[in-house]
Amino acid sequence: MTKPVSHGCDKPENFSLTEEQITQFKLNGFLVVEDVLSAEEVETLATHTDLIASGKAENIPETSIQLEKVFRDGSKSVTNQVLSVRKLYNLAVYDEVMWAHVRNPKIVNIIAALLGTDDIKMYGDQLFMKAPEGVGTAQRWHQDSASWRDIFPKDLVSAWTAIDHATTENGCLNFVPGTHRWGMMRGEQLAPFLDDLGSDEWPIVPVPLRPGSISFHHSLTLHQSGANNSNMRRRGYAVHYMRAASRKDESVTDAPKMPPFKQVRGRSWPGRV
Image 1 (cartoon, rainbow, N blue to C red):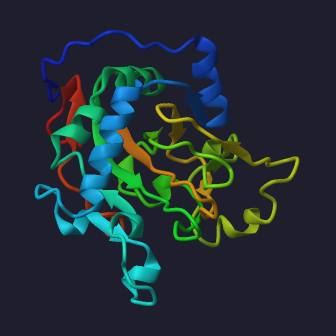
Image 2 (image 1 turned 135 degrees about the vertical axis):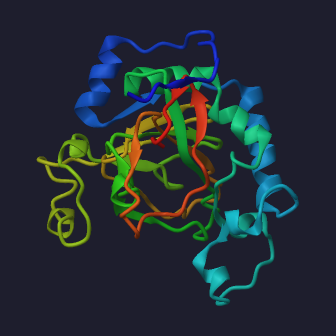
């Protein structure tokens, strides 16, 4: 048997969940924890996010910055670089400020409770900018693991941190409770259910957040966000965590090509992710 390798990361100060919160996550596929970050931690994220989006962070490659489609296809001219960005991704593998957030014990302790292990790696990260006044576009209903099809088990958890106030007007996340128990659904499998979302059977739950609060969701939970038609920005940093004992199926060729997975806490296993 291959032995795990310890990375010597002590379990830091506790930020624990109740049994009721863990049960709620298992039942609904998402959980909100308010005020996880301090105002200073939020400000650090906000300032560094805009530096990266401006293109002035030399350690972040251009490939990690994606503009909104209207700017990518040239139908609209870029007059403000930061407010033209749709999302930033694969940041923490290059940047110490973002990596410090990924490893923040207040977040990782919650992830450990939801995954049921202290042996944790980062799958990846995405920072959604959602600029105001109709620039920030909607995101369709989807399951994250429908894209991350090469990672098994399909049991990852994302921590979506609000940098700005996320409201129903500026495009907060919406979830359909219990859909993580449906299994993976793509394309034609999911399409027949879309008209039923929002019914009594499959209600849609909006999740507004104040800065520093975090929503945690299972990688099979259906979620989406609307366009930002308000005059307020809506930045949210999503970090995707998985068990270090997970496996990557190299025969799957249509999954995202990710940087090497970084150890967040605990042990790793040769031959696993």
